[in-house]
Length: 363
Image (tube, rainbow, N blue to C red; front, side):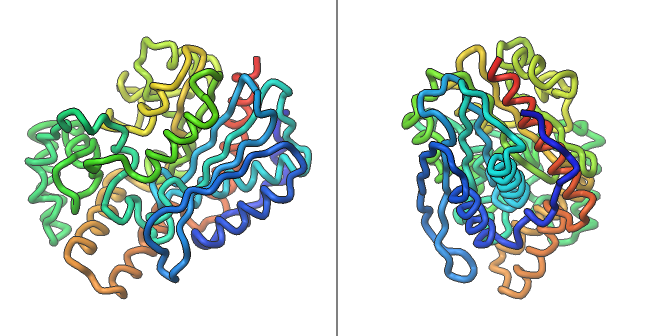
């Protein structure tokens, strides 16, 4: 079951969404094992008119009691890491480097936010951040007063003035309030960053459909959601948004060890957030299951905010295609650095964590 690390091939990182989907489907087709493949078309088109689809594949016994779920592109542009990790796993399964235990199966979900992946943005075409969208929309939407206070600064076109306003807010209210105000989630401003929407987004509906289709409430789950852009360069932080004293947190620590961090305990590079996709899966989990985000760091949090806020400003102001394309490359450089060493670190860590999940869930 353990991976070998000598054969890591950074070329599995795709050039774009269309290539990623093609590679993913080809690797799935090359497998000789029981499988169930499903496609979930998404509205809209990519920049070259390509269709946008979320694909899933169940690999292994349909009645398996234990399941490892690997999600990618919850935040669209972060799908490069998601695709690379899934393609690498598919190749390892084909080559026999990974053998699934008889009692376990794997469910891969490719490109949960395909529009954002194709257009090199984190959100969908309605500006919705899937990872702030896991709410009960029949209830009153949560408020983020820090976002309301920061909104003018967020849309300040002068970057230096924006940074100064943030520094003043941090000095007055603290770093956590600043980060929660910008990135904690907000539900009133579709043009703004980290907007959670007013209805379930495409990826939300896909997850619900898969949970129901495969009766996942009745299985032991190890869910790994692949992300990038936050934390130390090249490091894959295992972020657990289960409550610190919950069964899910205990399971995560048992399977993944002391590297697990918990935002609600203040031990993570991520502050607590609203509407995380985790919460949708938590509701379907037995006490012997857990959901973790595997977050790969690139550059500083301040640089992350600056890159994202510039993206939202350009789109909100109706920036021309040249301006959008130029900034899309800046987005790509932040969320998926081209350095081979960074990409090799990512693949090494994904192999390690998926191996821990397979071993943990199968015991």
